[in-house]
Amino acid sequence: MRDERFCNSNCPFTRAIGTIGNKWKPIIINVISTRTVRFGQLDSIIPHISRKVLTEQLKELEEDGLLERIAYKELPPRVEYKLSEKGVAFLPILESIKEWNCKYEVAPMPSEADKKSRISYSRTA
Image 1 (cartoon, one colour):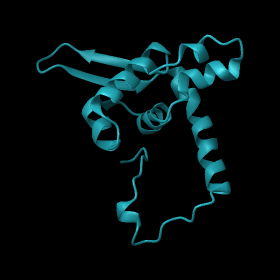
Image 2: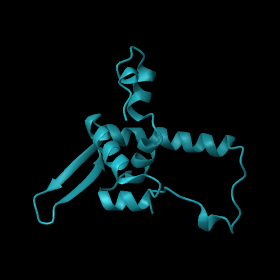
Image 3: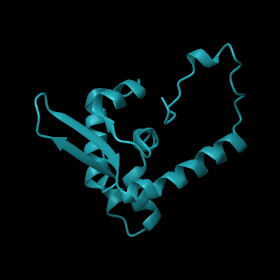
Image 4: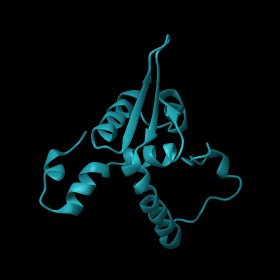
């Protein structure tokens, strides 16, 4: 749920955090990346998000201009999501965050045996 106090702040950084500042939005943006994805695909790639929360987050990302929702008039109905120009412009920022985490990560990386149970939100999933 969006915190309007952040979105309406006078500070540009605070407004940016209000737009992308919860745990799911950057993950959704990272998963969609440069491709077009259907709701069911997002639901299966991001396993710990509920369908309700995913729906809310997609709606907010669309309202904030980071995401485009493409609805096809066919039966059964089909909806796809892709990043807007604004959303694509956010991808290098996500890459910088990932690089920063890899450089300063305190917890050791899991061993090969642990990798099967590790969750990955990579774009190729």
